[in-house]
Image: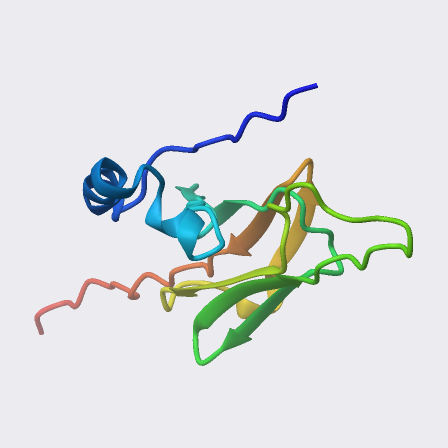
Length: 147
């Protein structure tokens, strides 16, 4: 069996790597002992409904125990950390792309939300955070008779 090296889309160093490849015949990242794997923050969709906001965040591979949601000074912070698994005595990696990973994203909430009513649920790798809106009080109007 032949093991073929997987090369994801090039990173910001792509043009530099191509120049180095012309001279040395291999990626500079390979010479440094790692591959250029793209690291990004999880994607987020925020929906607004008449009574609530819904924040949906892609969190594949993270469990409920890995995720933390914190609200401080009207800033909602979603973070996660996952540790690398340890190898058993007779195991070794031929290729290792799984590693410890973490992220943190923060969102400033508008004044028109009920902080006490925020709920979260994790379904199939998507974190759903429901943020209820407060009832906006309309200013009282009345007609004044001219005397």
